[in-house]
Length: 162
Image (cartoon, rainbow, N blue to C red; front, side, top):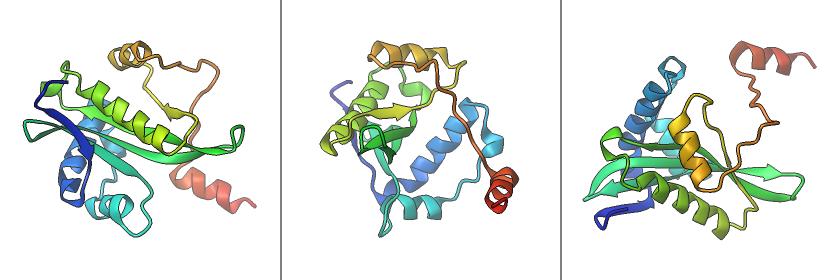
């Protein structure tokens, strides 16, 4: 990261920028159709009385350049909380200058500070630049695991089938 780059915890005033980054990330991942983005909900989840996630912002010369959003998960095998990196995004014009690495390191530092035994995240199988970046950092891509998801009507149907 250059001397003018900085990674810091997000604050409530950053929510509109984080919303823009989430929209940009969804566009990059070709998942815009899945967005149900609400700034007020995000603000509550990040900064309300019972935050459910945290966020970091990367800046270059005071300009927002990227973000990372994370939350705690739990490992029954380790019987300890872990950290899950939900999103890591750097705006295209700021890529290639170490900001992604700075954000990943900052999230890893949060995990270490919280005593988490691991940091997990997902990456789309077609996103070869991200996969290469993560592997360069020593990340293991777990070949035996697939992400499963219930949402919407399917989630409601499973919940109702008691």
